[in-house]
Length: 343
Picture 1 (tube, rainbow, N blue to C red):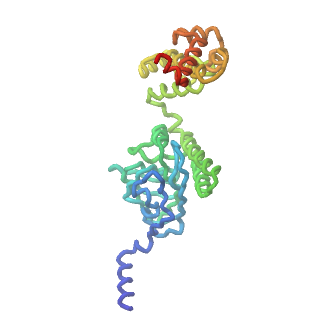
Picture 2 (picture 1 turned 45 degrees about the vertical axis):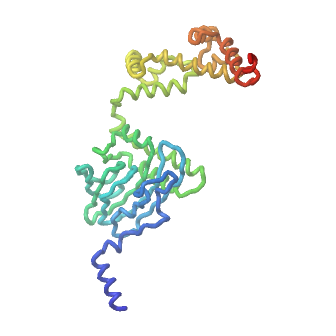
């Protein structure tokens, strides 16, 4: 009995980290989902954090499997931990760490970065990351484990990338408060709280975008204007907008807008808007009992006679002729005896 006790004692002395690293717990397998996640997604942040104590660390899983462009696997926080280090580790999702207190040094992609209070550290998917906090420096952080296509787009808009993963935050108190709200909401099981948590994630990124280094950035992407204009036309065509209104909404020169739109799409904004309205009108004539005037109004053309002329120019038929032809084709399809008339 004494030999066994002494043997175990020696093993513990050789590996002091075994006393301090928190063990993996199935209850904290934050990345479990129905989407066959990779193995490393099941690892808890606690499994990778090298800590001298786990008492100051708390983490919440967030299980809300919806088809969202922005979602979260987990969130957490730790307070005043000393002699802290992370990694080296690679993750298959984004890990965002907001530093409330402390100073350290980050190594990623063969580059080194200083880590200070009120910095946001972004660990990108499939990037190896290692950081170490200065000795005897308290380390207080909050974190979010995120995924979704919108995270990529938001990072791009914020100017955060693997070559520049540290983002200084001026409005630190607001970021801190939002992350605390996300942490609290994530543990609640009602649908309202889950949806509220997703909305807070968007608010988190909006808050980051309020920082001066983002507000002063000019988008270098010409295609961004075209994509925005297409979305604007899709959701506002019924208000009678013109291509000039679209350019004004984007706050760019109208001639320049027409030029880049044609280069990207092969057509003009005016022609694109006409095609959109005529296609919408055709569907309304096929599937509803709206009058021609009501159809015209529904697609953003407030002159019925102009609408009828435009529709005929585009389809070769007046709106009423188009509706009758569609009704006739539909009757041929659903009337089985029609196909046997000439047999």
